[in-house]
Length: 327
Ligand SMILES: NC(=O)c1ccc[n+]([C@@H]2O[C@H](COP(=O)([O-])OP(=O)(O)OC[C@H]3O[C@@H](n4cnc5c(N)ncnc54)[C@H](OP(=O)(O)O)[C@@H]3O)[C@@H](O)[C@H]2O)c1
Image (cartoon, rainbow, N blue to C red; front, side):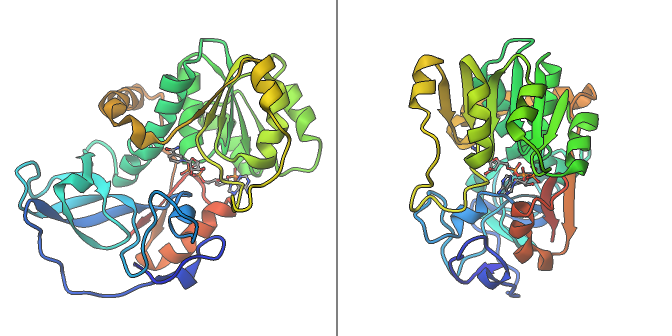
């Protein structure tokens, strides 16, 4: 799937072109993989926009994506034919990549490929780093999470429950709210799209205030949550899914006084800043999974032809779990 132009707003089919090319050669020091599953991530909106972004995908190149693939040819000492790898494989059926693009081995006998791009992939690691390493919550504290039923949010809820925290989620629609409380570790969840007073719903579900705000949306949801932060609360700024553009900067309430008076800490982070923690985080996630305390909720689209509309699905909240494509 090749990128052919910059996106105006949320990237849709007009941004991509499905092309057929000859099978690529295995590069020196690299591997050739059959892609089993490729992720669809909210961050792709930024990569395809005209705004300057750290991970811009240039026109004319294969769409960048993390995925899982089976090695079918190898010229790397680290990878043997038959192994499965998680790494930067792109939206394509076969990927010829340098070994440096592969992040870790995926044990697909133990869990299917989609699990390796969700709870054992970037979503799981992001949740673990944000909650465990940055927020450092104490048992009994309240953790409030936006996009609670999504790929990252679904792991945060389960990690919080396993750590003895009280997790409260915000999600769009009754199905996601029900799944958050029944399966994703949340003690309570709020349907932020339902008519009614969101502030009152937050006050009701968080009677002791909020100690950790794990924010995936920013915008109006964050505006509604800030007044309920406790003194010493930590804000984990993981995503900004509700804000379509930062040029010009969107306007909202000013929070500097809250920062000062409540001694807040606001952590902005990108999971890839913490690669040193990846092995430890992955081991912790696998252990929780083996204990039955962490399940993967995946929404897999069959066929690369669904990829061009998939980013829009995320921004319409149509995904039911971590969205990916089986090419
Ligand atoms: N910092 C990092 O290193 C890092 C790494 C990975 C991901 N992230 C971020 O983490 C967040 C979650 O990623 P994910 O892969 O797990 O995606 P996801 O939560 O599975 O899917 C995106 C969700 O965003 C919500 N959403 C979309 N538009 C919205 C809007 N206008 N207002 C409120 N909610 C909206 C929808 O949930 P509802 O239906 O519930 O509204 C949708 O399901 C994203 O912001 C992503 O960029 C950050």
